[in-house]
Image (cartoon, rainbow, N blue to C red; front, side):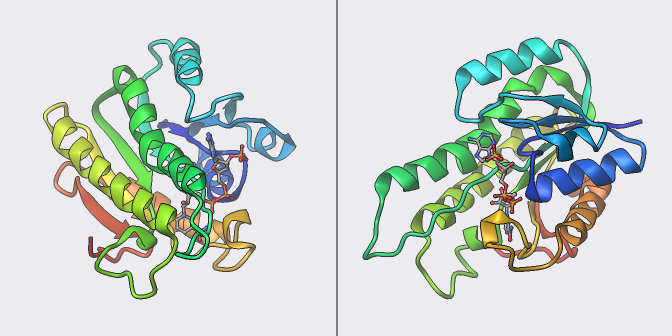
Length: 219
Ligand SMILES: NC(=O)c1ccc[n+]([C@@H]2O[C@H](COP(=O)([O-])OP(=O)(O)OC[C@H]3O[C@@H](n4cnc5c(N)ncnc54)[C@H](OP(=O)(O)O)[C@@H]3O)[C@@H](O)[C@H]2O)c1
C-alpha cells in the first residue's frame, strides 16, 4: 500500500486524484483548507486548515504527520488569475508566486523528513509555464509562477537524487475545473494520466516535465 500526500485535495484535479488513488487501494492524506463531504466520501485521511502560504500551517502539518512515511507527495494546489498589460494587478501576481511557486517548495521542504529513499515528488505545473510554448502572451503571474516552479522542481530533482527521491513536473492538460470555468477534459481523465506518470517515475526519469498524456514538454 502506497501513502500519498496531496495538496489542494478539496476540489478539481486534487479531489479526483484522491478519489482514484483511494479507489485502487492506496492511502491518501488529503490536504485542504476546508473539508467538505465530497472529500470525506473518498475515504481519505483529511487534514483540514492547511494553507500553503502559511508557515503556521506547515508547522501544524509536521506535527500532524509526525514520522509517518510518505511514498508520494503530489503538489497539486494552485491558483490562476488573468492579467494582461492593461490590467496588471501586482498583488494577484505575487499571490500566484506564493501559491504556485513557493507553495510546492514550502510543502516539499516541510515533508522532507517523511520522504524516504524510493519516495517520489510530483509538482502539478502547467504548460502555460513553458517559455518555448508561449504563443499568446498575457497571464503574467500564472505563466511566470509556473515557469518558476519548473525551476524549483528541477533543483529538487538534483538535490534529492542522492537521497533516492525522484521528482516530476506534470501538466494535467486543459481540465474542466473551477480554474478553467469548466472548460476542458474531465478531471477523471486528467487524474488517470497524472497517476500513470507518477507510477512510472523513477530516478532515471527524475527532472522530466511531462504532459499527463505522456508527451515530454519543452521548457
Ligand atoms: N484545470 C486546468 O486546466 C489546469 C491546467 C494546467 C495546470 N493546472 C494546475 O492543476 C492544479 C489543480 O488545478 P485545478 O484545475 O484542480 O484548480 P481548482 O479546481 O481551482 O483547485 C485548486 C485547488 O488549489 C487549492 N488552493 C489554492 N490556493 C491554496 C492555498 N493557498 N493553500 C492551499 N490550497 C490552495 C484550492 O483549495 P480551496 O478549495 O481551499 O480554494 C483547490 O483545492 C493547479 O496547480 C493548476 O495550476 C490546471
